[in-house]
Image 1: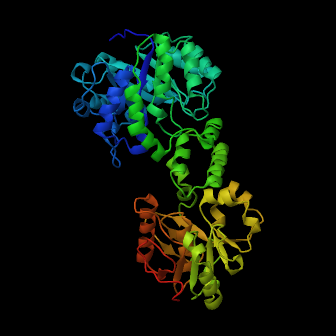
Image 2 (image 1 turned 180 degrees about the vertical axis):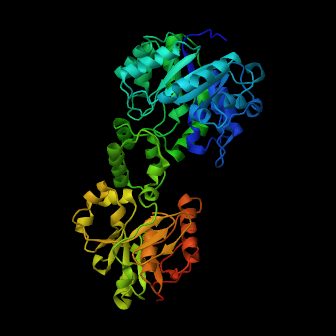
Image 3 (image 1 turned 90 degrees about the vertical axis):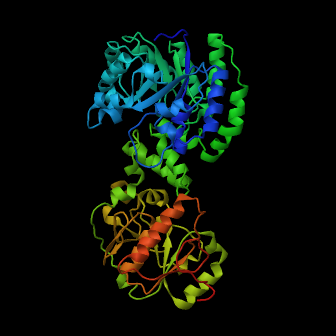
Length: 538
């Protein structure tokens, strides 16, 4: 199949943007989008992924089957593409060629025209035989090389040399970390062209605000395939924006475009989504681009309000030191890594608590609203008071210890610990060296923590908890200390649709059903399903 135009625009909004909404786009949006793409002169629409992954709910654009595409009304001037992650095929138990045959029929029987593979450099050569098979079936085929920016000139040149022996329709490279400068994008094109004489493409990310400049620089060096997304919708800071790329390409290829339907689409559908999900450049993504950190780390933290500004910056510093080019759920859930396996501490809370009442003070607004009553109760009843992290809503002199355990939170708050008036209860013995060093000189009680899903277990100097959230740790301290009961202040809760609500409800349910758990009682307003009373009634 031959193309009859030189500069080609592929809009991959529904594929790249699906990372925000689990690829669950309404048919109304998809049809308005397709019509807008045709009017604006887009050549290919990459509707989504093809995937074997069945974990969790994902919408139709995560699989983009032929049946799904055939259910749509495709404008006559739009060609349809899909993408596959090469790793899924390379690691398939039946082997990559057998796997690709499970996903695609001959092109004449399919509404798909273009198939692209996203692959890392080390997967490149294993992907090429699948490309050859798809070409035999009549498809246009492209490869998107990820994280090329940090590869050596020799490695990049080798890719071009190997690719020259295969019939690819487009050899793409992606500015995966959004860290390239225009002269670097141009240099990569030049290196690949030493051996690769076919069409080249670029996929730019906007971490540092350079997506358009990098795209135009690559075009100036001979790139003819250009990716973009509506409003830049895509992981993290997103991509170069289709609405701007089309304006630039219109001048270069003398092609009439009508942007009115696209602008209406943005106003009606994509701007509200952007307001909700928050893609687009910001200083965190800029830092991630600068230090070669995968933008999904930033995206995940921005969507979780437990990560404040200081915590996000500390995580960036941590990833800058240890390397964060590849996103890892394990790194984000660092508590499960650091606190995996059995461990013991050296401090036994029973020596201090031993049948006393424990009051855990969290950071909910209700603590400030009822501060006087909480402080009066502490003076009157002398409970053992555990403050979470470094919050200072009540009189510090009334707090006996502070509890902290999540590694990223420890990094974020390390400069505050030396100024605390109370000892810090922390799983000292298993913390990474970088965190231990930051807490040198801090008065610490080492109470061990092991994290195992859906499990609470209490021992003299350590406990097992289902998460490294500090509330789980504080409950474990109180219970291992043989608390008569645990009062909870400042556990206001979140809205019903906030994922943290489900997480906390599960944690509290696990605790209450655990062997040896102390009775718990919320004493300020709470949305959680736990026993409650009023601090004024105690």
